Length: 352
Image (cartoon, rainbow, N blue to C red; front, side, top):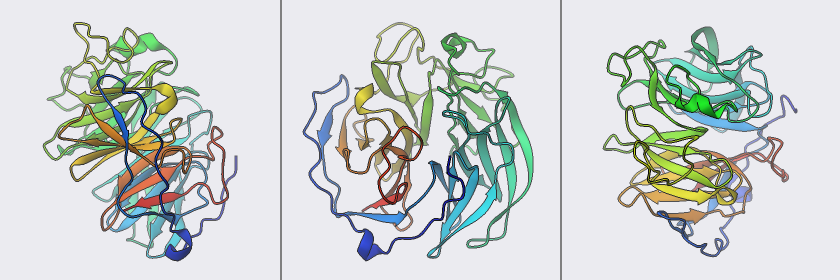
């Protein structure tokens, strides 16, 4: 593990990389299809030399990035990079460590792995863009099952103001079907970690279940919620999330057409996907893919179809976010122990 590696901003002229042709079209994976497509314009490096980055969140005009292994929160703003703080107690092991972050009402929320569990803490976010610092913290949710694989970790605030979190099955598949366990779920809570009265299961944080390892959540302008999910050996998924719905794992992987389970909008072979962070920008849903090493683009008007960008051009992609001023940011993840780092990895790419 490399801790505290120096970050530097690349100049636009030196960083601009024109896209080469995308990979050839692959056979469609019912019901989704994957048609190669090049983005308009080019791709530029926003910042490089990140150490196993995991999540991007915005605090006003400042972009914040979490590093899984170092436990650092970094700030990118105004042509500079700096450390905001470190998450005490975060332990890097396998897929665990400092994972998803979110910002709301002057506070930073962090999902991280400790020696004993996964948890979500809330930190006072002091200062302003260019001078943010972490203040006192408070745990709002503890005791989430943790494991070196199937560890979940994405958090985001929905349009309803509630905090949503994805949890993996922690290597115990049957927990995904157990409504008494928080593992293998998408959870919904108040900003203080409370149980909303309108959750689908009274007195429970569970919003949806039957998930193996969801790692991306996002909402369309009309309020529809989407989640990306890692499969086992056959199919990875894009799902539309409905309150109280069962997404099948471990009884079903991919499209099962079985009563009682919700089938994905799209499925892809695991070799072409491993979908992690997702984001809605305009009328499209963007999906960062790790093993598949590509950015998948889903039109919201036709969510069973998709195109592919950056195919094997920059390695593994962990997260995606709306870029300040337009476009999309994609976060590479080649230094996490599973990728093949290139000079300057890891980096944030801006796609026009």
